[in-house]
Amino acid sequence: MTSGQRRLSAAATAAIVVALSAACGGTNTTPPAGEGTASANASQAAGGELSGQVKADGSSTVAPLTSAAAEFFAEEQPKINVTVGTSGTGGGFEKFCNGETDISNGSRPIKDEEKAACDAKGVKYAELTVATDALTVVVNKENTWASCLTTDQLKKMWEPGAEGKITSWKQVDAKFPDEPLKLFGPGTDSGTFDYFTDEINGEEGASRKDYSPSEDDNIIVQGVTGTKGGLGYFGFTYFEENADKLKAVEIDSGNGCVAPSSENAQNGTYTPLARPLFIYPSVESAKRPEVAAFLDFYVANIAKIATDAKYIPLNSEQEAKLKSDLDTLKQG
Amino acid sequence: MAVLSTPRSAVQLAGKGQPVREHLFRIALISSLAIAFIFLAALLTYVLVEGWPRLDSRLWENMPSIRDPEIAGAQSAITGTLWVISLTALFTIPTGIAAAIYLEEYADKSRWWNRVIELNIQNLASVPSIVYGILGLGIIARALALGFSVITASITLGLLVLPVVIIASREAIRAVPPSIREGSLALGATQWQTISRQVLPAAIPGIATGSILALSRAIGEAAPLLMLGAVSFIRFNPDGVFASYTVLPIQIFNWISQSREGFHYLAAAAIVILLAILLLMNSAAIWLRNRYQKRW
Image (tube, rainbow over all chains, first blue to last red):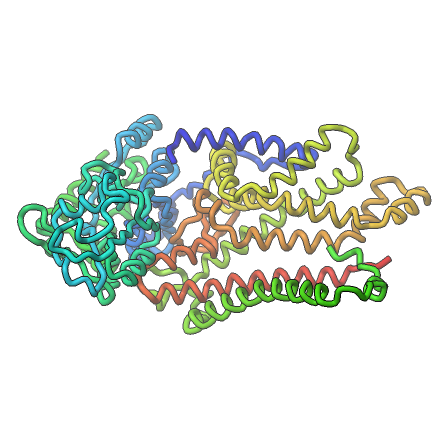
């Protein structure tokens, strides 16, 4: 839902509010306005211990990483309350650009209209790459024919034109058996869907619609596990957790077959499905000592946090860039 | 509302004809009941079996952890749920009862606006909860600048269940026999004295049952709170009405979508906790009803 639509629906529901407060016969006491936005002011306690709140929101793909960072951070700064929401990348930016959160998690870069929304509210931010994800295409364990697929073959399966036409593996490649092709994937609200359609079908959001969509990756796992001709895609973490149930497909984008793995994602050979994961801290928030402390901790321990949360850590070059990006952010 | 009991003689007065149809009808009724009961039993067994290994004190003593399902708990979600639901009750029950008193005792039904209000309340009771979430986001969180806090969630959930409270309270008030009111007025009591000393005490069982059932609905809501900034990871209990929070349904949803199996058991255990809180609330409703029930 775009912010425009949301504003419209808020206006429409305002009518309901009026009707409702009338229904209450005037007994509906309006809570005092202006007391809200309890942005806890950080106070420096003795021994370098800070307190206050850091609000993060956004992509559910990045949330476990930021949550893990928050959990490690709590051991060092137990009085700083870090909260992580999962409104989705788009929903997160909507709140972030409204000045309601300090950090926005993104599984894709910020879009132009989101940039405009942030500019309109005067919210300045930095883009920090914190980990890498390898979108993994999975098939059933009994699938003996597809151990490597080219990006063209993937496109043939997933492009909008395939809808209702490509229903058998044989249609994808004449060497494949005549097994019904059943597709599973994330729903259209997901950053993963945006990224996959952009890279494979050439246009963000363009996909055939007759597949089984689910916002819950566990459902995709179950779908592919239970269907011999099943194929689905999701983040690498999910594949690692379910590696005993599924088979990952190697991807050939013109330079031979490359398996999804930490090494291949880090050294850049797993193209085009390796993607960076971002956090967007607000410049204004980063001036608050508790937010600055959290960001410092996040960046300094990024390898440990990523490994623990089962993400693909950055390579040394990316990590150096992350550190210098944070320094730039702190300077203004 | 069970205030009006069916006359006892009805069964004895029933005719003797068509025994087969009578029988079939009875079987149909019992199987309807059985469907509801079997599904409930299956659900309960499933979550109990699945959540049993994790159904221990870690669940309410520990804070959520994304790193290790073994040390993760739901304390912040349990306290968040209690905070939100208490405030919802504080907001919605007095408002709902007052609205019901107005509509039953004061409103002139021949006026068109009172009929419009009535119709609107009936309609509001069936508005999807996500719509209230959008309303809460636009009006309460942003226009009233209450932010993404416990109070925003409580007011939104309060609005969500308010129609149910009003409708239940009206039924309860209507079930108080007119003779009670007339007697009170005849003895020289004012209208307000009649309401506060005769009608309301007599209507308490119905109002309490309706209100608690409404709150039980509110406690299981996740959809509107997703819009209202209930966060999925928080390691602190709310310390006031403006604090950030999470609630059990959100925590459960979050755990179910994790890839590690341990979190799925944890989610099942948290469902048991949520069901236990619901059961406690419903028992309170039954106790209140029995305690204050009057028969005329």
